[in-house]
Length: 83
Image 1: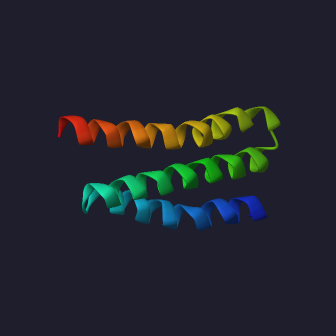
Image 2 (image 1 turned 135 degrees about the vertical axis):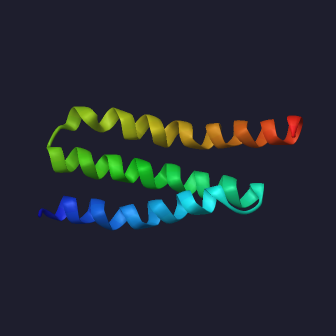
C-alpha cells in the first residue's frame, strides 16, 4: 500500500460522514454537508490522480472544485424560490 492509497482510504470516512449528514438535518446543514462532500471528492480525485501517476486526469477535480460552489448556490436559490 502506497502513501497515496492510505490517504485515499483515510478520506473515505469523512466523505461517508458528510453524505450521512447531507441526508439528515435542516436544509442549511444539508447544503454545508454537500459543499464539504464536494471538497472531499475533489481531494480524493486529486489523490487518485497522483496514485495513478497520470497528470492528465487532473482536469476532473479542478472542474469539480470550480463548479462546486456555484452549484450549491444554485440549489440554495432553488430551495428559496420554489420550496
